[in-house]
Structures are given as C-alpha cells and as structure tokens.
Image 1 (spheres, rainbow, N blue to C red):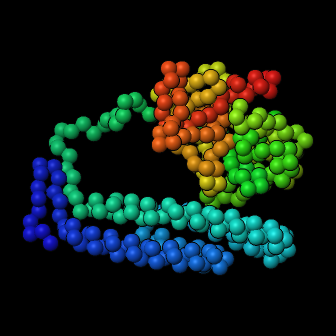
Image 2: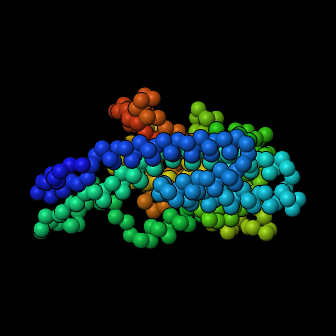
Image 3: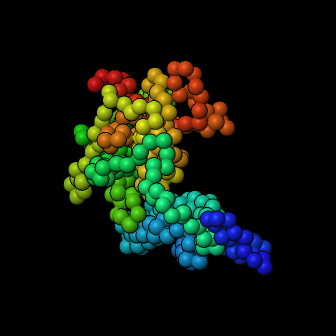
Length: 353
C-alpha cells in the first residue's frame, strides 16, 4: 500500500496498484474457467445451462450482456416448446438450437473485452477528478456539432421497423422493405433464384420482441453480380395474419447525397444478432460507391445507409481496414480504411427506374 497519496492540482490517486493487478488477474482466471465450462455445455447441447451460467457471470462482472442473453432465452425456449407441442419438427428445432449455439459463441467472444472495460470503469472510483471553478461545462467535443432535432428519433424508428434479418441457407445478412413489398439486400446474401426459394426474412428481431418471419417469391427475384452492384431484390410473400404493412417501409433519396464529413446511419443485424445502428461520417464518393467510417460486421451486408433525414441513399455491402489495404475513396486516389455502400441512383438505373 502506498503510504501517502500523490496529488496534482486536479487529480488525486489512492490505492494499491499491486492489489488492483492481483484482483484483475484473479478475475481473469475465474472468467477463463467459466468460459471453458460454457463451451463444454454448448458442445453437449446444454443450451439452457450455458445460458444460466453466462447469466450468473454477467451479474458478477457487470459485462452488460443480459439483453442478448434474454433474447436467446426467449428464442430457444419458444422453439423448444413448439417442438414439444408438435408445431415444428425436430429438424426445425435443431436449426434453432444451432442458431442459439452460434449466438452464444459470438457473445462469449466479446465477453472478455466487456468484462475488462467494466473493470476499468469501476476503477474510476479510486480517482477524484475536480473541475476548476469557472470552467465552461458546455462544449462541442469534436470539429462539428452532432446535435439532432428529436424528430430524427421518430424517423429512425420508422426506418428501423422496415429492416429485417435475412437468412438464406448458410448466409445471414440484413435487408429492408420497400413501399411496393420488395426487400433489398446484397447478392452475396441471396445469391440466386434457387437460394431465394429457401430464404427467410425475420422482422422485429430486436431485444424483447417477437420475431415475425416471411417467405419470398423466388419467381420475382432480380440481382446484379457481386463484382458490379452487388444487390438483390425479391418480392415478399405477405401474410394475412401478419401483414407487411405492420413494418412500414423505407424512403429513398437518390440525388441529394451527404457531403464528406456529414454523418450517415446504418441500421443492421451485425453477426446476425439483434437489430442495432451506428452513425458516423462520410469519407468520400467514387463512381457508384459511397465510403464511410460507420461500423459494421459480418451480417450487416445488405443494410440501408441512411442520410440525416433517415432516407436510404445506399446499400451497404463491403469494407476494408488499412491493414487489409484500405479502399480508394475519391477521384484523387486517396486510400483509407472504410466501409462502402452502393448508391441507389445506380441500382435504380440498372432496374430501369
């Protein structure tokens, strides 16, 4: 233990660094043991026991994964009940079981980082930060204002309702519903007419909500190859008991595009998980592509790229980090780590609109 505190004019630091390190090492060892146990349960198809174990770990560490766990609890138990009651066959249940196993594996990948972050946040309690008298408490913390009027929330919610998870064979991506009952996604998500025949669209795949699934009409499928525009459009088969109108539809903007530095928002199903969104800035535009720093992950393919009015301007489909060589983002040849979307003005031209 340090015998005395070290002081600066604004910061006081207390406590033993050695004790903190010892505690953190103990937490890491216990966490590793729990994750190994959960892996074993998953391998034995003990999904509910694995969920219970992760739930206990979340309570102890504050990793904040309870929402994801709650969703998996609901989906898996609903499927299990449906199988017991004969509403789905065993093969269908095994598919849900496989989805749960995949989701748990993905949750576990992010868990160590979340636990470590939570530990760092709580360690702030050992510090006393004092703001000097007269300090200005209202500041823009970046080069531009990101403040939005609150009606943006309503527009974003309406757009999010029309976004769905797309399951096509082994491919999982994101799509979104149009006014005339079509869903757009990437060609590398729904690869062909044959793939469309078994494709499933899942709306309302959000935390604490009930998912509604739809089939598609493979006879009304059109696409561009991945090396060109990489889009697929397919007609959704409506349901009398759950009409498509429940989800609304997206609106498009093809001409008034955001400038470099302005934000775009992507509503997505990253890793095939529950619906999420992220906003970040545009880096450039070149030919049929828009480039941006907005974060995505596998499963985000086919997501709508929205402007500040929550209108769709592009179809997200790819990205590269600078470690992977980056992407050329403008006519000057500048290269950057970026995500990339296909402008809908080019897609609609291809479709003859």
